[in-house]
Length: 290
Length: 291
Image 1: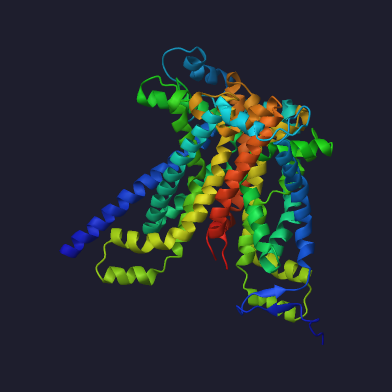
Image 2: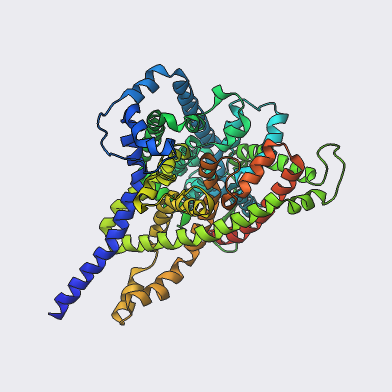
């Protein structure tokens, strides 16, 4: 009898823990839901809903999860009648692609150097990399501006891409998963006469796949979301990424803005969904000593 | 049969790590190191030099720039706000995420919610803005829910919206980190304690928590790093000159940059880098996973 009572109490306890977590999780999903339902409501309905806000009057914004007249007009307008939008969309894709490729070519080998070799100054240098990773953009803004001006790269897409390629965050992240590879394996490979490049390509990269994917996703989200850098260094609006275009749409065109946001969001959600598991593993690896 | 070439590495006295006497690591490291030097280190050296000279004539002026930064009202306000922001949001994030991670560990079904918590990471700041305006405006959803017209994007309420935004954005990341850390706590010790009659609370404070200490530093560092990224949302919602409560250091730098106030910027950047560098060194010592 007592045992059963205790079991009941345990169940109730678990439920008490589970409910808030689940509810909060749903709450976190809400903003995306709002965008989704907002992007298919037509302009008239938006006007009606936003009425109290635009007129600064009494009452509150109305909301219906499923609009009265669902429409794809905003998407149609964006994809077929807004060449500017598509242009910026491809700008973003291009920019992110080049940043990721650059990080793969520069950052990943550097992480390997830190993880697989011991050399004088390794610790100091790695700590320097960590400090650089911590510096927010605003602190390095002036130095970046100076060097970009010197190299005459201001107002070109390279002004955003090159510094991002040499960001030290990927180095830090991938270093952690390289570090998880048993050292004996590398020693054995060296004993067998494998060249360093071969060890890197055939042992290092495949075994750190999780970390690489995680790095890929985090870097992708970071560059897809990039705002401060292009805002500071790109005067020419045709070079802008999508992330700077969205805030320019006024609230009067809320439906249009929601649809544009949805498209921007879909790309990152796609990448997120594709690599979710490795993202989780990679995040875990970045924080926890293997 | 190919013999290994001349001894390329030696065993160190600790008997485990190898000192690779070959210089091949340079091939891996140099491209990145050169780039980092070119884009960050060398120009930052130049900024340090500039912080001691006047931008106009280039004459040496000692600590004048630093003094003018410290005298700057906006800078002081921003330092105060930034400290307050970090001081409030970091503990909230770390504690809430730990509680959620513990709940997930206790009721494993809940791990399915992880995706929901991680989603905000994938949501670009620019897309957040529209939703935030709808939710937090004077006539927005939250006001509607409460039945009073509060403008949550102004005054001290904006500060708390900012905290909420930060937590919303980073909770998933931190929960995943905590979960991984919790997995490193040995189960048998907890089991032994339970058999000896220790309650769940006691096990948590005396066994789990001490084990988490190392991970807590790393998680704190990563969360600290992300506090600066919240500027995007603030900037998009409130512009270059937001309310007094959410005027952050990033705004100061941003506005110095647009005004091309190079003197103050250089001194400010050196100051900020020094403080952050000290924090990083302190944490980095704990982050290093060997030696």
